[in-house]
Every structure is written in C-alpha cells, then in structure tokens.
Amino acid sequence: MSTPLAGTSEPVISVRNLFVRAKKKVLINDLSLDFGSASLTAVIGPSGCGKTTFVRTLNRMVEMTPDLMVKGQVLYLGQDIYAPKVNPVMVRRRIGMVFQRPTVFPTSIFENAAFGLRLVHEEEGKIDAAVTAGLVQAGLWDEVKDDLDRPALSLSGGQQQRLCIARVLAVQPKVLLMDEPCSALDPAAVQRVEATMNFLKREYVIILVTHNVGQAARVSDRIAVLSAGRLVEQGATAEVLERPREKFTEQFITGRIETQAEATV
Amino acid sequence: MAAPTVGIGDAGSTDILYDRSVRTRWRLGFDKWIGWLLPLLFAVALIPIFDLVYYISSQALPTMTWGEFTTTSPYGNGLLVPIIGTFEVMALATSIAVVLGLFGGIATAEFLPERTAGAIRMTANMLVGLPSVILGYTGYFLFCIHFGWGLSYIAGSMTMAFFMTPYIFRIVDLAFSSIPSHIREAAYGAGARPSQYVTKVGTPIAFPQVLNGVFLAMAIGVGETAPIVLTTTESVILPNTIFDPVTFLTGLIWTNYSEGGTLLDLAFQAAFIVLIVVIALNIIVRIISARYQKRLEGLYQ
Image 1 (cartoon, one colour):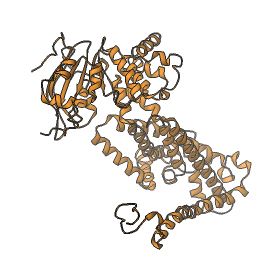
Image 2: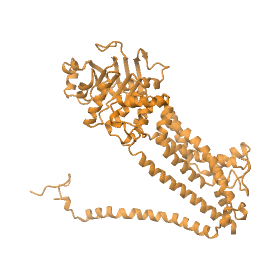
Image 3: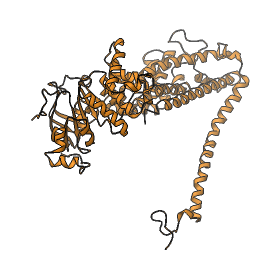
Image 4: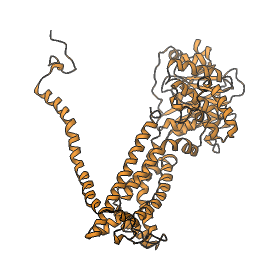
C-alpha cells in the first residue's frame, strides 16, 4: 500500500513495499512512501533505524554495499529504478546524492564544480555558465568567485559541503538525496548549508536524512519518522512535530529514544 | 589518613609518582636504553650492506675507464653493449608489465567480484614469492622451446615482463583499493560511470603510488639474474632482430664472475653499475612517496 503525502500531486519518487535485507537482518521492512515535487522531506529516526539505508536505496547507491538484498519498487516518475534494464548510473544522474562527509576531489574548485558536466560530456563553452549557476544555487558563489582555481581542499568544511552540492547539481538532477549533510560541520557552517537547502527546495525534490529534529523543523516541509526499518508516521512538519499521532514519534522528538538495535528476522 | 593514591589497584603504595623501588627504576631505565639499543642493532645489520657497496666499489672503480662505456665488445673490456642491452630489455619488459599490471590491478580493485579478486590477489602474491629461477625455467620452456624463439631478446624480455608484472599489479591494486570509499561514493553520487570514476577520480589519486610501483618493479627486475640467463645468452653485439640474443648486466656478472683477469674486472664493473641503478631507482621511489604523502594529506583526513 502506498500512502501519498497529503497536499502533493503526482509523486516524483514513489516507494512501494520496499524491503532491504542484510545477511541476517531486515534493515528496511515493508516501507511505502511517496515524495511529491519541489519539497523537502526530512527522514528522521533514532540511529540504527535504517534511514541512511533507506535513502541509499532511492538512487541504487545501496548496491555499493556488498551483501544487501533489495526487494520492492522505487518508482521515479512511474519507472521502477530497479527494473533489469535500468542502468544505476543513469538513475544517479537524475537522483543525485550528497553525503555525510564533505568529499571534494583533490583538484581546483572549478574542476570540482565542473566534474559532473565533464561526466556528461557537456560542451566546453557551456561549462563556465553551468559552473557559475551550480555555485550560485549552492550558495557558494560569493565566497569563491575570485579564486576558482584554488585547490578545493583549502576550503572550510561547510564550503566543501556546498561545493559537493554544486557538483551534484551540475548534472541537473530532479531529486537531491542528502544523508546527514551537516553532521560533520560546525554550527555556522550548518546555518549556511541549511540556507542552501531552503533555497533549493523550491526547485528540487530533496530528501534529507537527519538525526537532528531541530534541523528537520527548520528546513523540511514534510517529515517521515522511521523506526526499526518501518515507517512510523509521516505528514506536514508542523503537524508531526506539534501533534504526533504515534507515541514513538513523541518519544523520539522529545529526546527519549536515542538508539535502536537493528531489527532482526 | 594516608596521602591520596594515584592509580587504580595500586592502593598499597602511597604515591607512585615518588616510587623509587629497584623494579620500577629498572623498568624505566630499560625503556630509556631500548631506544638506543634497537637503532644500534639495526646499524649492525646495515654493516654487510655498506661492506658490499665498499667491496664492489673498491674492486670496480680502480679498473674502470671511460673506454669501457664506449667499447662495444664485452670480451674486449666493453660495457656499452650490456648497458644498452639491459636498457632495451628493461624498456620492453616494463612496457609489457605496466600494461598487464595496470589493467589487471584496476580490474581487480574496481570491477571484479570480491571472490575472483581474492583469487587473483592470492595468485599474484604466490608469483611474487616464487623463486625467480623457476620463472626463468618456465620462460625458457614456454618462449625459447615451445614458441621456438630460442635464446633471444624477445624471450628474455617476456620472461622479465612476467617477473615484474605481479609487483606492479600488487601496487596498482593496493593504490586503487586504498582510496577511501567515501571518495568512490561521492563520484558515483555525482553520476559517474565506473570507468569515469577510474579515469577522472581514481587515477589522479593513485598515480604517484602506481609510478612508485613501476620504479620498484624496475629496481627488482634490473637486479634479477635467473629469468635472463635462462632465456637469452651473451652476445658481443646488440640484437638486430628481436630473435637475436642480448647481453644483460647481471647475465654478464653471472658468466664472468668465475673467470679471472679482465673478465672478472668487467663483472665487478657491471655489478657496480647495477648497484648504482638499483640505489637510484630506490631513491626515486622514496622521493615520489614523500611527495605523494604531502599531496594527499587533505584527502585522508
């Protein structure tokens, strides 16, 4: 059973009866969830609840972890991304991902932002404009416009993370997956990245994994709460945080549940 | 009441900061002396190496003249032919070994299933541990006899290439495998194909280490004797075709060391040159390693 989020039209990503199994554990257990267009959904839950695994299934990044079995459907604009003829590379170009650790490549700022464009063999003449656009969208342009040839590794952690966002935006994805993008950053950097998220959610479908309820409250339109690989509840951010329907949600957002052992078969 | 004790389970002594018992003093002293003793023992272990360098130099240098490097006949006190011959063999062998090692290493590190990769790694480790005389013999039977190439430049170079390949393979495999997974994921998350990850992200990061592996394999290969003396034979001239024999420096040492007079002098001179080349290649490896560490500091934080 798929439960569309109230107030959204055609879902961009629709997850149906998703299971993820490790050798002896069930990491995601019968999860169904829809993500509408141009909105930011925060996936929250205690650590070990499977939220990172869940978001990694949405662009087949989960396949990079050995010994995980994925069952069920993830529909992107109605197409199952796990269908046999679908190439994971093409999935990842439509559904980009930003990770917990800011990971820039050991080249210049410009080359990092242009990385995706060179992957899709964009014409040389269009790269300059696209790099600028990506850096503007990621909220980094004003800080780096004067020295784009500087090594990217010389940037601060927060700047590196926004450069990673720019790099992913360069291949023009529709969906942006963010796996705890702020957990390795200091508070000032977190603020800048959150501002970027607030700007980007007008154009992209953003799915943000966070363990920080405050962050979910600040940037998300909708919240999905996970527990032991299952969807506990979902809805508009204010509603879930102020009037949680489930006792688990209430306990989690008030800080009474910290971690959770992974569910076993 | 006694003064507060420091440390758990040490309630008997009043204060271990002021412990002056023989046992404690001996232990502290041991730690101090071991810091001197170990480097000293290491220096003792180095004596044979310095002795070797000194002995070879003292035997080779007095008889060495500029003429040796311009005379072509090895039987007439010439080193030019074996030096160029060594260079030619190493050039062909390195080219083949780099191609095989590079493709094999990248495939094993990035593309092959874990089980296959493990089997290949085990084979490579076994090849590295294999006595080179066995490899030389295999090369002799395969290239010289079975392929009918005879004792030739091509047979020697191919055998040398197969000798060097596992060394290069292992370092390429290691260089690519040790790139942190978050860098791999970042590339794939931005939409890279596996081959694009290898060329645009992996190669720039792994390159210095790969280069290192190539020089290391060359240093090991140029000092190796068995794969060469079994697959090619000495010649007074350079090979005109790839099926002609070629003289390798270590091959020259092998055939001349039991002789006397000028032939023995020539063997020492050849040994001196091999020694210099091996030391130079190892210094190059050290320099590349040092630069490599500096360049990637930010990456492996």
